[in-house]
Image 1 (cartoon, helix red, strand yellow):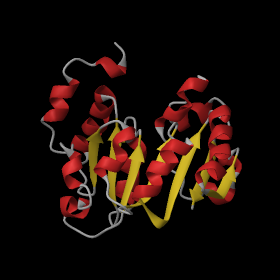
Image 2 (tube, helix red, strand yellow):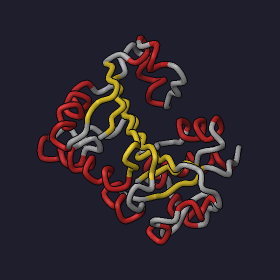
Image 3 (cartoon, helix red, strand yellow):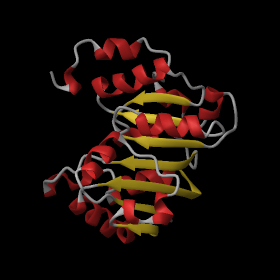
Length: 212
């Protein structure tokens, strides 16, 4: 059975306390959800949640929101939370195209994109999470001094992402085409499930940190 097709996953998510339902109602007031004024960091396309769960454990002074489109993938992140609940981590099931309907202007301090779907066909370029179209969306919700971090093992997608920066008015603060050989960027690096898998196969991991 494919992970994305687990029967009953939507129903389980709909009843789960760790998932924020009707997230658009919290636009501009996410700190009331967490009951504090700590910075808000989000991961778009969080998969099974290992990366974000580890970040939240290590940084209790930051509020984290994981966004995932696929119910059955999100279910795995929920299961991890049920084993080790965290007050500063919550999940949203939604499509990233609606991001500006869920977060207010400059409400987010940091955005993480990890091993995003490459959408390899040219006609689907606008769907890629590091595309200029999405960077324009992120610009609306990210604080002016905020940062976006992107990791992937897909060199074609990464080259595309770098080319999109001047188009959207962003600039690279740090870029590497082999993260695990970059001592500076590897400091404090948390690996996702995909990163562990692909790096163990010898695939170089690309990463950038960008700002406006």
